[in-house]
Image 1: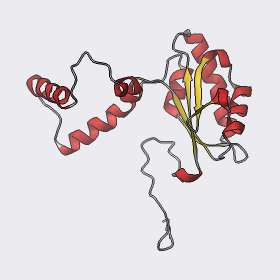
Image 2: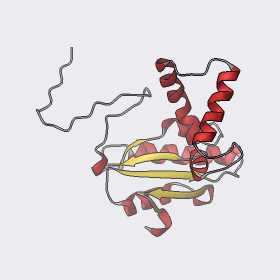
Image 3: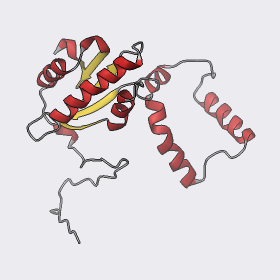
Length: 181
């Protein structure tokens, strides 16, 4: 049996794991988030090569003396299989569907789905053919990582040494393009 004690007034936030390999939460004030955007036009073999290079980097930098706290395991698995990471919207779809099912708010018939879609489009002030900035954001394909260190230049330099730049569209570290670090 395990017991955990936290001082009264501590800033403990429980971790709800959505994946088998979930890690304890990282204090967002001391974390640096990064996104790696693979090129969308590269063949499967190059996607696998990129996945292998990232796997080695993630593994090395996740060690106690490395700079990473956590990384995107699911998207890495897709790259290793020769596929692009899933769009952001699809990553969250399963969770959203599970919540809707629990709350009993999923449309059950085709007519209910059509009505829900029309209601969404009218409240969002758009037609189904419009591409908004949110649509573009939700279609993005990238791998995320959280760094333990607050030095984005160090993280960028480690990543540059490990990954073939010609396979990367761009990298954002702490909201800054790695070319500007």
